[in-house]
Image 1 (tube, helix red, strand yellow):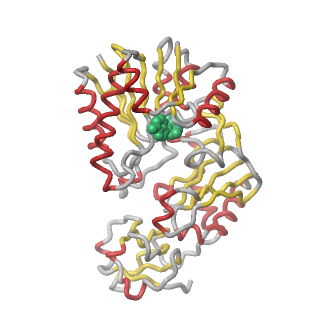
Image 2 (cartoon, protein in one colour):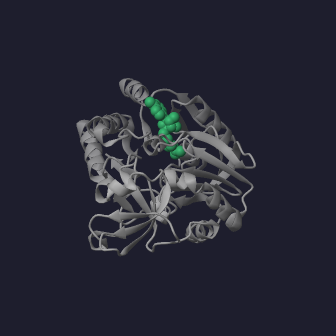
Image 3 (tube, helix red, strand yellow):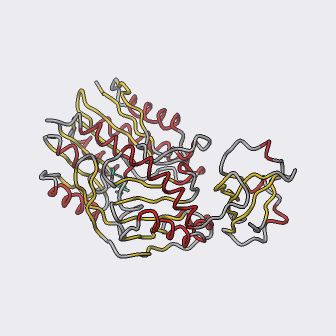
Length: 388
Ligand code: SAH
């Protein structure tokens, strides 16, 4: 296929197999005139093929490789086949059609995230290349799944780094609020107004782990969003499930979902740190505390401030965890390493003088595969401690 070529400065031998090629690795003098998102053949300076990729001179990650051969057609069949592979993997884990269907680089589709809610899909194109390929992508989805509704949730702030506009629109049908099923529990999700793609499938296994410990226990689900942890814990027999979040619409959905499960939750609209401080000052404690905040380290330059915030969260959460309680601390920032996050959690808990045992160190579930050469794609960290 005739398409522009981009040359990597040091031939393919220097490449490790990562799907990312950085701007400083590329002969930019020729490439920089290409419009953002152009499909390119990537070659080494010795003329050897590196692969088919998409190029954006405006991004630090200038090339994202889609295939290890040059000239691969990026058409509906390409997407149907790639997404088909992702689908087959999910179908080995889940018997219901509710999961992250495509997890970007981890599914060899850099820049693309698709969540599946039965016959409704939310699609996020994170790069100029994926934005340009939306038409064959949607045609590929049609071939593979012929979904009823397809919502483009192209409002992730990271799109700014690619020079892309932020928007949400329906590409097919229309679905605002729907019911999904996870861990055999029904939940509501608002796909167009909700955060991210409307539901966080990544915590599925961690929610089940906590629920299994919850019978007869009081639970604080801090940064609950729509009640993922708290409702499952209540369903498993928790004596009390408090869902704390700063978002009133998220808590309203949590209450609806609780009703659909035949359980009650106590919604509390408050700021995480203010509420933890208040609970700690009044010596209120819960047998199980989950703290799953928004990313505190949004970019590398926020690392130190974000790390301090995680340490403070760990300290305050431990303070409101009852004797012999369980504490789950999570981070969805890919800009803090698992080691650093664990160190901050340990330091925060230690400040309370409580002895702790780490009983689970987990990430996202298997519908969020990690590219082995891109540790950044393992963004979620969830540490569970048993406190004395
Ligand atoms: N635990 C949730 C996901 C949490 S996402 C689940 O299982 O689905 C992070 C949540 O933190 C969002 O719902 C957001 O509204 C909330 N949040 C953001 N800033 C907050 C703050 N300062 N205080 C309390 N909640 C906050």
